[in-house]
Length: 173
Figure (cartoon, helix red, strand yellow):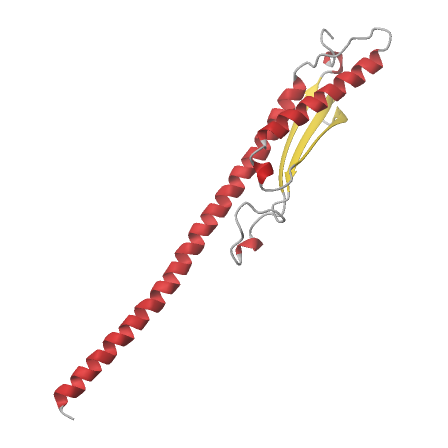
């Protein structure tokens, strides 16, 4: 075997080894960039869902704040107040459900509105709490990438509180 043949065989071997090395480097870099893209998309959707839940809770609180048309019964004001409270809660739930419609395609969204009694910061006011939750761990918006499940939230929650003067529960009150 001559020296020229040996040099030619060594160069051919080096080029094929370099091609294999480039393929391995490409695979590693591609996985890193794909994981970064997947993370950006996942957390972008989580951010959008969280903002939607917060907006829905705020919309529900605003809807509960508006006067609800109820029959005014001067003989039984407690019944009229109970009807007004129920109407406010129903309006809050309806407004919140309308806001989260796109999220309901992915999984169940729980909307709850309750009158918590007097507000903790002012006992003279009544507080209505609107809370909306979405079980993200059971119904992710994008299928999880291995390892990202550790960073994703299990539950997304939006909350809002609306305060009302008890004298203003009924229209003209």
